[in-house]
Every structure is written in C-alpha cells, then in structure tokens.
Image 1 (cartoon, helix red, strand yellow):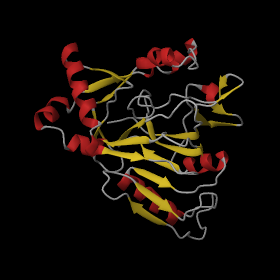
Image 2 (cartoon, rainbow, N blue to C red; image 1 turned 180 degrees about the vertical axis):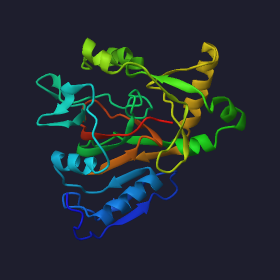
Image 3 (cartoon, rainbow, N blue to C red; image 1 turned 90 degrees about the vertical axis):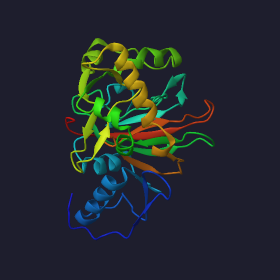
Length: 291
C-alpha cells in the first residue's frame, strides 16, 4: 500500500473515567491510510489498548487489508466459521440459517486473551459490527497492566517468574454441552491446539510494561507449584484481573470496529438474548512469543 497518501482529519478521544480505551472519529478506513496517520493510530493503540473506530463502512477485504498493516493474520482453528472467500475473517454470530449457525455463537463466554493457547499468541484483534441486537451484546475489556501494578506485593513476588499452561480445550467440552452447535474437533484440529506454556507475567514487547497473562478460559495450571496452590493462585489472579477498576465496558454502536491489544488485556462477551441477532467479523493479528 502506498505510504504517501494525503492525511485524513480525525480525532482520538480517550474514554473519560475509564481505565483504558479511546474512540477514533472522522477516520475512513475505506480510504488509503498514509504512514503518518498509521503511526498515529499505532501509538494510540499502545497508549489506550482499545481503539473504537466509529462508523466504518468497510468490506471484509478492507478489514483484512487494514489488519495486515500490523502484522500477519492468524486463522482460527474453527474453520467452518470462516467468511466465504475471506478465510482470515472469523464470523462471530448467534444467527441460525436453515437450522445451522453461521458463526461462532458463544465466543468470549469466559475472560480470555485471544489465542493465548498458541506458541505465538495474538498481538491484537479487530471486531467489526455487522448486525447488533437491540439490547445486550456488550464487550468488556480488562486492563492487565493496571491489574499487575495493583496486585498485592506478596502476590507479585510469588507469581513473577512463574509459568502457566494455556490450552484451547480447557473448557471446550463444557461449552459444547451448553451450545450443541459448537463443533466436535477433528484429531488434526486437536493437534493444532496442543497445550503451551507462557509466563504468568508478560512484558509488552513494544512498551516494556508488565501485565498479567492468565485467563479463566485458557489457563489450566501454574507450573512448579503444588496443584492446590496453583488453583489458589489462579483464582486470586482471575478475580483481581477482572475487577471493576480495570474494566471498560463497550456498548456497541452500528458499524463500530474495535481493535484491542491482546498483550495488554483480557476481554469478555456479555451476551444477549438468544432471539436477538448479533453478527460481527473478527480478524486476529499474530504477535510474538511472550517473555
């Protein structure tokens, strides 16, 4: 993409009183984005961890193109929910057509960081609203930098330097019992998401800030401590990391596209009534090995 495009006029407003997040108003991601504008967005994303691009009338191909400015894209293991002709896009939706789901309907049921179960977890994810329910459907984001910084000193000393196991299948069967449309994985898919080990406290590769890097969805155990203490530590970290003082609750508006940093945050889908339709398109950018 050319890097000498004319600059666009847009503003970035931090969300007042929130521990993270900013909205971007006036930017049209359907237009070419010059190097200066891209660097401004990149800096804002590092500073605020969540950017909400308002009123984006972009195609899935344009979403993919913009996402790739930040790095290679990752393909979700549930390939039956890929967007036709655009496999980089995961459909997140509770809509049924002819009795079958068009997308992953229970995505984000537990607090998590996207693809933490991979050797190279996600840098960030972009979620573009296509169809929103009249009520519900909010997404919550929890700042894991402030969670780490606010952790009691004795707990900090105990967990810093420890490692934890992350596994995509940790709660998969539990989710399948609740949602009969969540598919059974093939052996090849199971092999693709074998358990991995990451530090409990990771360092952001671009800012140097430390953050908690465990989640109730994918983290199964802390290594090197007795099993009972592992359960106690994880319970304490899960509770602390999702406290209200760390959380921004996003109430979706039509055509919002939200870009969050999985190295800094956990997120959670609040859900909506089953009879109300919700459909969004997600792209996921590959990050690096946590340290």
